[in-house]
Length: 390
Ligand code: NZQ
Ligand code: ZN
Image (tube, rainbow, N blue to C red; front, side):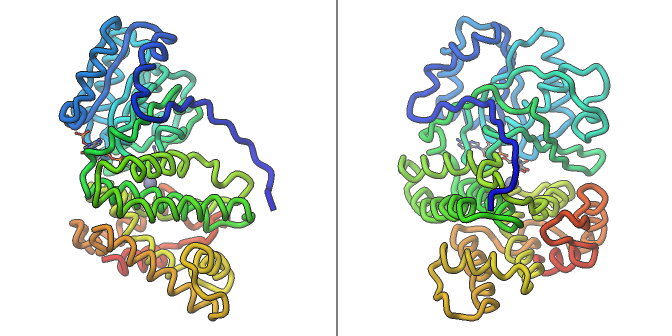
């Protein structure tokens, strides 16, 4: 069944080799004053920075560099918002991974707000305006290039917030798979794990339909089949292009139109882990995924596992549901391990002494206990998942 839904994505996608040639025309629609944002230097190593500066020769450009993974409200968002106000920025051009883009999205609303920007990000105040954001995404992972979310860390508050608002959709996203050839094995694996998890967060929901299931299983198959090739041959355009496009769609909501929502519990847990230990998002999700699956497995949820088992992994339809479900859980564990992700939180630097505190943090921020979750998770359940993940 397809349940009622509303869907709108205003972001224009430019996909393929050399698409950034259209960048000046797209930016020019918004004005001449550009804030160019980027991270720690990967765009300089691959020659993209030089190319962008050439394309922007007719624009007045101010730069914000050094945006870190798990982007920080202070200094990055605060500084960016100040630069926009001082320079009357017409458009923000984000060049890099999801962290650069998320930071730029947060800047785009904070720059149009006179109060404390964290009040917008934390949901205390609703944003009323934003500066348009255009991006050149260089890492296949988050899907931020096609969604209305950003995730920002506030170090002083030990908080990492997912912030959603239609104002945060990029105006245009440029996706050239060649810019992902230089992505390291670690980030390629973690980016893919992130997108696999995005699909699973939407797959474990009720109601759902044959059509939703088909799209999501196809997305999972593309990610899982192409990542080994990208790891072995980083400049394989075919594999990189599939990863890039599937990652772009995986977080946009289109895969789950007409289906129920699971409440994205694994992201709630991972955001607490990143807030406390600054770990790589996709790695944290990979570790949690099989443990969360074990926690929610029940006669009610078994059907979801069986669909994955038979349609994605090709398991025999005649074996008992519980057995299939456990084989599915083992298959995801083996997949994440095979692409080089250490499957224990301790290996990522997480310490067990914070588990109780993190469980309280998750409940306070994300209400995983609510009845609208596909499977509600109380404190004991969160502690069990985190402990099993250690
Ligand atoms: O900083 P630079 O030098 O650019 O290096 C980055 C960074 O060190 C590097 N990198 C990016 N493109 C590269 C490259 N290295 C070589 N070649 C390239 N072409 O990769 C490193 C990680 O970058 P980052 O942007 O942090 O990775 P990702 O895209 O995975 O973003 C992760 C962030 O996004 C949030 C996560 O929580 C995390 O903060 N998420 C955002 C979402 C959204 N907006 O919808 C949803 C996700 O679930 C997620 O929570
Ligand atoms: Zn994610």
